[in-house]
Length: 65
Image 1 (tube, rainbow, N blue to C red):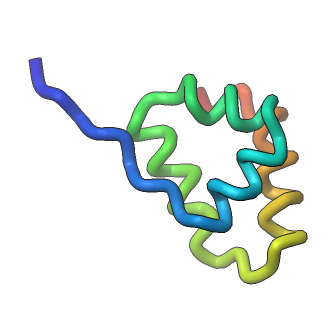
Image 2: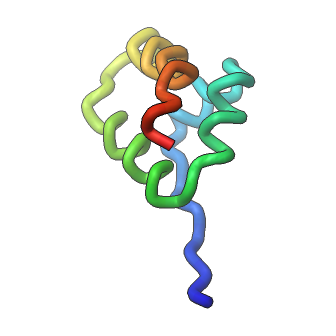
């Protein structure tokens, strides 16, 4: 069995997740691959408000799991 490390979480995403426990739980339950997809989607986010909105939207992303 191959061990895959969890991806590193960018600081802005980490702060936004810490402020939203529902999104944090959702993110924590995802596979490493799905977490990486979400992290990759945050690359173009340039403001704190935009990141908060993105994280808030994660609670409706159950289809991504």
